[in-house]
Image (cartoon, rainbow, N blue to C red; front, side):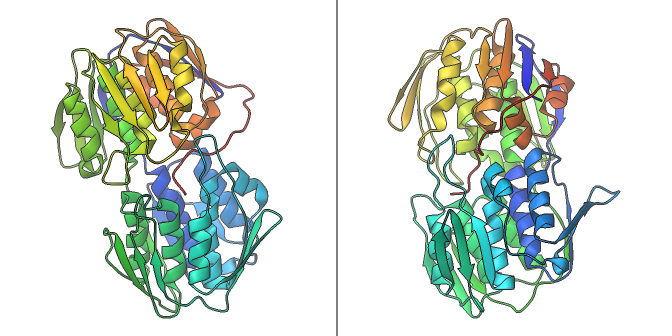
Amino acid sequence: MARFRITGGTPLSGSVEVSGSKNGSLPLLAAALLVDGEVVLHNIPSIRDINTMIQMLRALGAKAEFRQDGGLAIDSSTVDSVKAPYDLVRRMRGSFYVAGPLLARFGEAQVPLPGGCVIGSRPVDFHIRGFKALGAQVEEKYGVMHGRAERLVGTRIYMDPRLRSVGATVNLTLAATLAEGTTVIENASREPEVVDCQNLLAACGADIEGIGTTTLTIHGVDRLHGTEWTAISDRMEAGTFLIAGALTRGDVTIGSIVPEHLHMVTELLEQAGCEIDTGDRSIRLRMDRRPDAVDVMTAPYPGYPTDLQPATGVLMSVANGVSVIEETIFDARFNYVDELLRMGADVRVMEGAAIFKGVPQLSGAPVLATDIRAGAALILAGLCAEGVTEVSGGALVDRGYEDITGKLRSVGAEIEGLPEADPESSDDECLA
């Protein structure tokens, strides 16, 4: 959809089933390049970014088709190219995940450098340094990373403990899986999406110790075999709908999730005044008043997720009191604030932080999504605002959310998607 039209003021009520994780599925698709055989992935969301990665696999020569049961079957035995097309990497930074598997399995990778994006600088320096540490000869020329290695060799890699880079952890884990000898990655990311990829690799025959911790020990193997795997649910989508329930003073149940993945989010919502009931695979939220102001600081998992910071900012914009949100991951994550100001919010952005002075009510206005999560946040703002809000740049939202319009309507939201020509923009997910 190119834009969304939302009429605010309706409390959300009912149940929403969460789709498979966008951030988690992209590494799974890249991991399939390492496998000598067929990998069948289930619970893969039907969104634009997944389609882009499927196109990437096919451009490299792999077969990737959805089966009648909904599973995505990937066969990389037919890969005949190590050159990733620039157009696909330009569309989505997650495409750079193919670099590690290509180097490890085929001894060469030519992948364009993805560059920056609207939420801040996210260099792939950590990835490239890791490839070099594993013995690859790497050149960066004319905007392309060209790596070669007869076979990667295990080593010890230290990640920046302040960042625990998601993308570099994924890419270097993929590369080390088929390396000769043992690789130790210290200060590795513990994000659930990273852990899910590591568990898939283990199911395919990889030898990885320390899954779920900040220290990974990877003993290289000669080959990986095929398997079937079900992707984890999307905790960012789940958190978005929980915050939507809080904003509209609703009663919503989010199903098909792992509640533990959302611990920091539900803790914040409880502090804001929401009533939370957690089941084995669901979370119910009830809210009947204006939220209380809560200070927030984003951090790598298990800290508060940066991808939910914009939605949380909308919640704090109508909270009772003053709150401070500190952003420690992406230096331009507050791009959405200018649009929120158009809706009557009282926010002041400082270096690395924003001060939200809650107002009783937002007002509907035409606003523009600058990235996936900012777009979702502005939709949430429209749900609680007085009057009509139109969010342009909706194609960005469709990159990360499967049928967000239909799911919101199923719990009572007055929202419609309006298709029309919409410009391309850059990715907003955590790869750096």
